[in-house]
Length: 161
Image 1: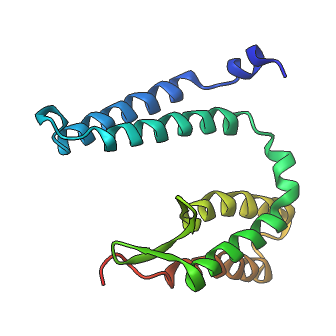
Image 2 (image 1 turned 90 degrees about the horizontal axis):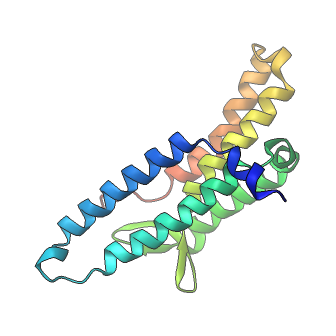
């Protein structure tokens, strides 16, 4: 793997904008948690670590071969549905909402993964059916295809209980 080519393909304006917005967010968290008054910087540090992980994932995703990933849309869709059903069956509750799956000390929110997975899945289906995109059968299929994860996400209890 050629790191130089990998880094040249990045949109550095986008990376810079994300970094600036994230830095602003960290400053807001520090201010809101009164870190300047001697409070613990734990939340700021935690969010800083997530920011670094996010930047690394962004760099990887920016160079991902989406055509290769599109070969796996059916398994991705199935995993997406299974994760959303798992939340309904054994999800962990936090602040009145059951939207997470606890994996030891880590919790994941499948509805967040569902957004990205559905973009890949819908792009693949629409590409395969682009000549029939205005057919009622295709539109109906897309509604059902999208509706299943939407209904599963909607079944997750809201934050207001």
